[in-house]
Structure formats: C-alpha cells, structure tokens
Length: 554
Image (cartoon, rainbow, N blue to C red):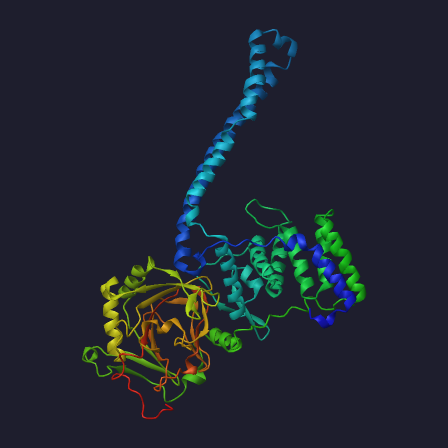
C-alpha cells in the first residue's frame, strides 16, 4: 500500500493495528547457524539421518504397542471379573480371596497402571536417540534457507505457487499453464509446508511472497477440515492470522477483514483479532473497499540487481537463444591450439560468443575424473563466499559450498591443470592460477550476476600478487534436469549445464581493463545436483603467452 492511499486519519488507524498486531509480529523466527541448504550433497546426507530416526520411531511404536497390550490385558482381566465374579457383590465379597484381590488391585495394580513410568521411559528413549543425531540435523537457518530457495525458484522461473503445491513446476504462457520441467520424483506440499514458506517471507516483511504461500496454506488446511496434526508447526488459525495481516500490508483491507472474521469463527475470544476487525472496519469506512482482491500485490523491486529482468529471462530460456547462435561467425571444430599433447586427440571446441570471447570444450573431462574430483572435495566443502571490500563474506546472492584443491590433493588435479594449460596455452600453476575450486550448489543454488575479475584494488583477488584474473576456465562435473545455466547478461545469451564440458572466457581486455561484457550469473538450479570446478588464471605468468596489444584501446 503506498503512502498516498491513506490520509492522516487512516494512518492513525493503521498505527493502532500495528500495535494490536504486536503479539503476532513479535514472534520472529530465531536465528541459528546452519548451512546444510547451501549444498545438495549435505541435503542428500540428511536422508540417512532420517532413516535412523525412522528406525528409532519404529522401536518406540513397538514398545508403546507392547505397553498398550499390557494395559488392554489388564482392562480385559478386570472387566471379566466384574462381568462374571463381581456381578453379585455380596456373594463375591463373602470369599476372602475375592476380597483380597479386589483390595490389592485398587491399592496396587491400578496405581501401577495409572502411574506407570513406562510411557515416559519410552518417550525418553526416543528423545535420547533423536538427540544423538541432533548434530547432523538441519538447523532453523537451513529451513529458512530452503524456503528462500523455493521463493527464488518461483521468481526466477516464474513458477506458479498452486502448481508447486501439487509437486509440479509450471508457469503461465499465453494464459495457459505449461510445464517448465517434469521431475522424475516429486511430492505435493501440505498446508504446513506452505505455512512455513509463507512465514519465512512474512518475517522478512516480504508480503508479496507471504500472501501467495499463505493463500495455499489456508486452502490446504481448509481441505482437511482445519484438523491439526502433531507434526505440524502451523494450523488453519495460524495461516489465517498471518495471511490477514499480509493482505492488510499490501493494501487489501477488505480481504484482511474477511479473513479475520473467519479466524474469529475458529477462535471467537481472540482479543487481538477482535480489535483488528474493529480497526479494519473503521478503515473501510474511511476508504472504499478494493474491488479487486490482492490489488496491492506487486513483486518488490530489487535495489541491487539492476539486470534482474535480463538475468531471469536468460535463466528461463536455459541456453535457447537462436538469434544469438545463428551468427555465421560462430563455429565448431577440433582444436589443438598448437599443443603437441592435443595432436592425436584434439578437443571439440564450440565458439559460443566473440564478444566476449566464450568457448565451450565438449567432453573435456571423463566421468571417472569428475567423480574423483567430487569425492576429494567433499570433506573440504565450506559455504561459498564473495568479496566484501578487502575481506570475504557469505551472501544470499551466492548459495553453494566450495572446496579448494591443490595439485597434491589428488593426481587428477595436476592432470587437469596440465590439460587446461594445453587448451589455453596459459600458465595455470599456482600462483599464476588459483587452486582448483570445486563448487556444489544448494537448494535453488545460484550466483547472481557478477564479474570474476576484481573491480576494486582492495579485492582479495590481488592477495596472490599475480595481478587480476585474466581468464576463467569452468568445468561442469555433473548434469542437471533443469536450471543452473550460465547466463552472460550483457552479451545476452546463456549456456546450459553440459556434463563433462568446460567453458572458457577472457575476463580482461588485452590492455588489462575488465571486460564488462563478461558479467555473468549461475542461474538457480531448478532440478538436479550441480557441481562445477573453477580455475581462475591470473595476469602474471602470461606475458609471453597472452601478449598485450600494440593498441592501448584493445
């Protein structure tokens, strides 16, 4: 809702509603440290943890069933006594054995059944087993990060939230839903699943996303009759509560009122909601109600991603830019680059772009080599960082984990260095080339538009004291089902992930200036497990291999 929509009187009412909403808004999701969501490898490892938990739960259920069988046996015994022996109290109590067993049951057996610790012991055993696995369980930040990943995929690939809840990846084209991809395995989302995503958006005051996800949460909760399940974080009441305020914040006061009234039907004594209803009604007297539901729902503008529209379009096309690739000057060939090592087995080269100069080398690495690289890198994977002044820091615009491999880490690392050197005719050994960086992307993993070369003299890139990054050599170690393309923003084309291929481009002009046309991005991975290996080659050491031009402007 823009400020122009409300007068001073109306703003007074809004302030009141803000205060009334305080109880709900103050329940902000706490922050914990977790990075599982930033690498799909770690997410896969969580499967084995849940399998253990399933086994623990099975043991708990078995013990509880045994306990309940004992209780049922006791119930049957006592019921039979009352039906057969104790139906005539006077006659029964004349027998001292019957009287004794009655007193014993009431003083001892019932006490043991009612106050049995067995149920508590079974529960405690389950909790202890759970706590043993706690170090390997995702943290709250992982859940928040995974939710943000879903919203990122929703935005970049224009996915419809109702389709996502059904386990389908669809966007609307020419008024009709079309499948962006058909994953081999999928699951529908529950009302609680959608509530969590909406709640994460809500806590960030991102009402554009919270409205869409909470709408689905409410719909799904309504479909179950509003019944609550013990594993759920939220309920129909929680979803209605958050959705009502989200609509209010987007300017849809009339719908916020309708949802609040529905909430009161389930929770009629909720004083905060009663006051909100009163304030919404006063606002609607001051302002005519909106005729269109969700009138104020607009995707927030990005303050830092000025190329968002181009970036998302290139991600959606996933390498399909026929006008770009129809350029007759682009070609494919078998390439040796004058290297004796490639004479008998030249590489398959595909020139993708002339400005910037971008080349794809097909079948650059074998499946075995790719698996070896991934295996060696696994133990060293850490959250990927970006340059932040003179230091490095994690950032939401880069979601992945990275490991740096020296040539001594495995023989394949040295072999790849040698192969890269033959193809590029550059010196790639440290410090003229950085160590091989292996990257595994996470849920909706991406790297928004950026330059590989340093754009500031204080950049950590210069710590090697071998100049700037003159070139990038990136190897695709895996394939993906959908998404994950490399998009060159100003050059207006993208390259889909091609397993075992490698892509090369110059970051600097021959005069040492950065080439702005190399602005590129790693599109979010939609379906799949994306692994790449990066080799950044620096200026120093290339003086006689990549000479400067006599033209200072080149």
